[in-house]
Amino acid sequence: MPRIVFTPQLRRLLGEVPDFDAGALVLREALAQAFAAQPRLRSYVLDDQGHVRANVAIFVDGRRLHDRVRLSDALRPDSVVHVLQALSGG
Image 1: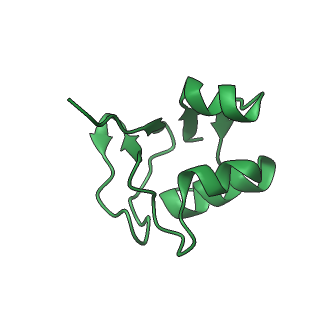
Image 2 (image 1 turned 90 degrees about the vertical axis):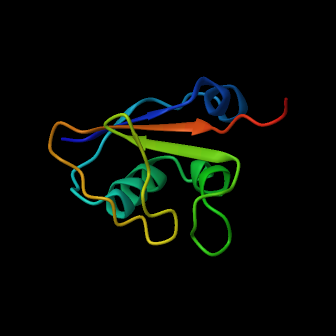
């Protein structure tokens, strides 16, 4: 099962946000399962159109998310997805 790991910053904002084992092999479906378990996560990760927010970075197996709009990136059963707050500034 793919595992979704959320950044510690989200855990501080929302309280307990455990890592999530998803039963899906497409990122969109895996995130939907995580949001069903923790509804408040959705608004921090996705905007009103369902796209990844500009201040959020998602990595699948160490590679930056390819499709920030449709979230169609494929997952393997052993994939690890990291959801992080993107850094900005200088």
